[in-house]
View (tube, rainbow, N blue to C red):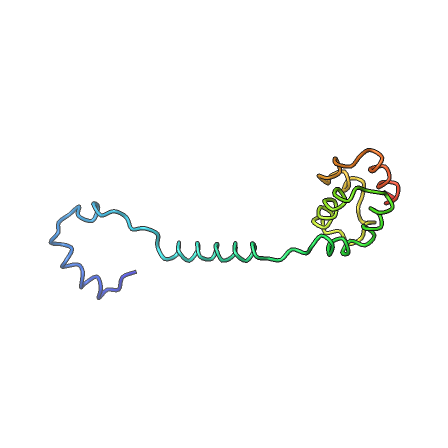
Length: 126
């Protein structure tokens, strides 16, 4: 916002130009608030992109009993690895927390063969 002294200073310079002169001026580009917001969004995005993600081996240790369950159920290692990531994303701490609906909702559930699914269900006790 312009101060009263700034208006008094510029008013005599603008009035001689005549009416309509200010309408012909193109609007200015991004203003300071937009730059601040864009900079904050870029900073937030950079922090999220560089956040470290625990490795799959660390996440399998985080879910108690998961490695043993996969070993006892003879689950293919590639599928087991993907299941570990998906279960970790659910926030599970112990394999006993998972219900049958949770297992079936996992995207990698479809990659399991029928008897692998059966062994997982039986050995997990769901």
